[in-house]
Amino acid sequence: MANSRSDNTNRVMQSGRLFNLQFFNLQPVCMANSRSDNTNRVMQSGRLFNLQFFNLQLFNLSPMRVAIIKYNAGNIQSVSFALDRLGIEYTITDDPETIAGADKVIFPGVGEARNTMAYLKDKKLDTLIRTLRQPVMGICLGMQLLCAHSEEYDTPCLGVFDLTVKRFLPQNDMKVPHMGWNSLQVKSSWLNPSLNGAYVYFVHSYYVPVNPNTSAVTDYTVPFSAAVQMDNFYAVQFHPEKSAGAGVTVLKSFLDA
Image (tube, rainbow, N blue to C red; front, side, top):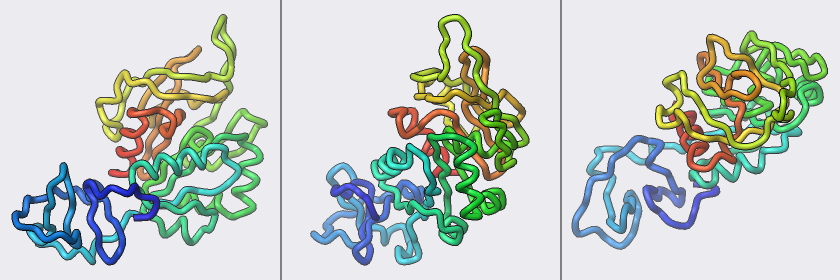
């Protein structure tokens, strides 16, 4: 598997490529008297297991193809590092064919709505993103751009969610942007229930109001949508790639969707 670590815990080698078994939902079976090679085998807790006892043909397994949409986003590198740590193969691309052919698509973002929408339109990605049928995850600005309109420079957005992104108004000692750790109130089953009350990392001046598609709520001057979901589109306002263990759980929830 590209970008994988050097150990083979929960991994199997086939034709020189590493596969991470957790994403195939496999439970290894112990095999005694194993040989020293690790072809069709997986190491777990220092013990070798042989996949032939699953009655599976390993060559029919292919690694999950994840596309990270490339544009002038400031957090693409941190998202890619997070996938590296999970052992996930990915491609950073603005090529429509590659994005359309991926199993999962991540739409990250740290930046400004108007310039980003101009880039997406120039690359014909605005039309593509709306029509994707595989699971798509928007992060931070990516979540806001999946909405219909943003108050940031009065910008028309992609319109996947029929929602308007609003600007925070400072209140008392609550400054804008909202920056730092804040807790989640989980409302939807796609997010692991263990995330209820968990703290995740935010950096944003604009927010999506609470609505029927809200998956999690956070409060900062007003309650707002920390996560939304509709059909194959998932989105979070916070940064899972910067949110420690809670962020890993969110990414796994999406990758398992």
